[in-house]
Amino acid sequence: MTPPKIVRIPALKTVETFEEHVRNLGIDLQFEKTIATGKDSALTQPISFNGCTIGNRWAIHPMEGWDGTTTGGITEPMVRRWQRFGESGAKLIWGGEAMAVRADGRANPNQLIINEENKTGIAQLRQILVKAHQEKYGRTDDLIIGFQLTHSGRFCRPSDKKKLEPRIAFRHPILDKKFGINSDEPILTDDDLKRLVEAYIKAAKIAAEVGADFVDIKHCHGYLLHEFLGAHTRPGPYGGSLENRTRLLREIVDGIRAVAPKLEIGVRLSAFDWVPFKPNPELAEPGKLGPGMPDDFSQYLPYKYGFGINQNNPVEADLSETVQFLKIIEGLGIKLINLSAGSPYYNPHIQRPAIYPPSDGYQPPEDPLVGVARQINVVKQLKAQFPHLIMVGTGYSYLQEYLPHVAGHYVRNKHVDIVGIGRMVLSYPDLLADATNKGKVETRFVCRTFSDCTTAPRNGLRSGCYPLDDYYKSFEDAPKLKEVKKATGASR
Image (cartoon, rainbow, N blue to C red; front, top):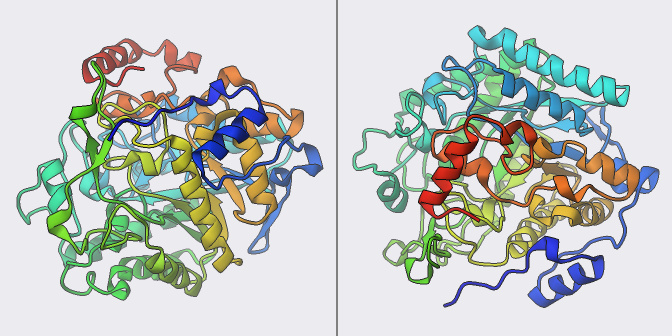
C-alpha cells in the first residue's frame, strides 16, 4: 500500500482539466461546464416547504466555534459568525449553532446551551442574522432558520476542553479503546434517557419562543442520537431493533409537537458510517501524520456497532436501514432531512473530505474527490427513493471553485434539493451569491480545506478560518495554533 497521489484542486485551472481529473479517478461526479447565473441558475430557484418558501437552493450548515461563555452564552465571535450567515444569501439556515440541550451534553465548555438563562442571547443571534440578511438582500419572508439541538454523547467535554466526560449508548470495542472508556459507568440508563427527552422538549419550546422556524434533532457525526442508531447490542427499549433504536427520536418528536405544535422539525443524519480509521505509521512522511487506515475490525465481525454500514465489511456503506429510517421520518411528518456521513472524530475523510488533516486525523487515504462523489451519490440514491423529502446535501466544500458547477448540476437534475456549506462561509460568505450573480468566484477567499478550523478546537483553541479570514489571522489563538500544527505533524 502506498499513499495516493493527490492532485490539488487549485492546480486544475480549467473546467477541462477538472473534468479530466474526475475521469482519471474513475468516479461518478457530474457538473455543469459553466456557472449559470440569475434565473438560469438552479441554485437561485425557490422551493416550497409546508406552506412557506425557501428562497434559494443553498444552506448554511450548523457550526460551533468553541467560543461561547462558560455558561453557554453568546460572545462577539459568535455574533460575527451569525451575521455572516445572514450576509451569505443562503435562504436556509440549518441549525446556526450546535446548541446543547443540557450543560453536561456539551462537546466543549464553551458550547452554546439552549436554556432559559441564554434565551435572550439566542434571540439576539437570530435577530442579527435576520437584520444582516434584510440589509443585504431586501427581504426575509423566504428565509427559514432552524436551531440544531444536540447532546454530544461519547464526545462530551462540558467542563474541561481536554477531558472527555462521555455519556454513551453502548460499549463500542474500538471507540472505547480509542477514547479511554473502560467501564459501563458512562452508559446512559433508560431513566437517564427519559430526562434527556424532557431536555430536548424544553429546548425546542425555547427555540419556538425566540422565533426559530424549525429545530434539527441531530443524528449525525457520532454524537448521542446518531450513536443510538447503531445500538444493536444495547438491551431494553432503546436498543436492538430499529424500532427501539429510533424510540428516542419518536419520543422527542411527540414531546415537541405537544409543546410547540407550529414548530417544524428536521433531522441531520449520517446516512452511512464506517469503522474508525487511524494513521498508518509505516507510510508516514517525516513530520507528517500517516495516511488513514481502518482499525482492525476482524475480531468484531459481523460488525454491530454502526448505522448504514455493511456489517460484513464495515468499510462499505449499507443503506438498507437508512432507507427504513427515512420511511420513519416520513411517517412522523418530517420533511427536512440533511444528509452527512461518518464522524469527524474517527473517520473524517468520509465525513468531510479534505486534503490536509486535522491534528488528530490522518493524511487522506484516497483522493478527497472520491469522498465527495461518495456522499453526493448516496444523496442522489436516497433522493430518488424519497422524492417528497427536502434533502440537503453535504460534502461539497472540497470542490472549491468547482462547487457551483457541481451543485448546479445535482440541484437542476433533482438529485438533491439544497446544497449546504459550513465553515467556508467564514472566509467567503458571498461564495454562492457571487457564483449565481457573476458566474465566477473569488478564488483567494475559497476554503482550501486546511483543517485549521478543526485542529484549533481539538487543542483547546477557538475554531475559525485562520488561513483566509483576516479576523482569525490576527486572533490571539493564531500563534498557538501554529505551534500545535508544528508539534503534531498537521502542518501543510
